[in-house]
Amino acid sequence: MDKKKIIEILNKALTEELGALIQYMQHHYLYQGANFVCVSELMKEFSMTEMDHAYKLGERIAMLDGIPITKPGAIKVPEKSIDMLKVNLQDELAAIENYRKWIKEVAALGDPVSRLMLEKILGDEEEHAHELEMLLA
Image 1 (cartoon, rainbow, N blue to C red):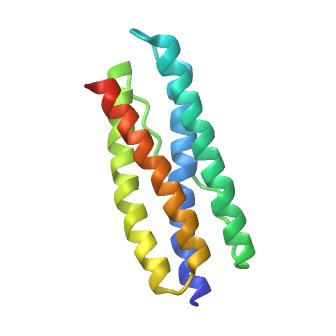
Image 2 (image 1 turned 90 degrees about the vertical axis):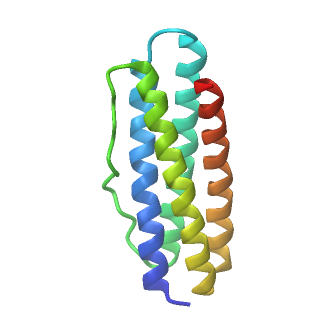
């Protein structure tokens, strides 16, 4: 098992999760318009899920004797609420693609524990994308 490479992959995922956490928090605070209460609460729920992902990734990195990264990925805060939903969907779709790649990579590196954790996170990201698609339909 190549711990260094696995830690590198998990830190990439952690960077994305930290950015998503902050972005969803901002969107929760700033969302306005139709279905304000429902959508704002959904953004809050998503931010909490992303925070859970970040904790799990950081804990796994530390368990592998790595240092969890603390710098978040890019944070997008459009002015229009509809655009918040659109960028979140784009980000979730990109995350899904990345998690599928990372799952294959950690599996090939012989780390079934990290693979299972990434698969669970992938499921959450797919659920987020589906909910955002339904809001934008």
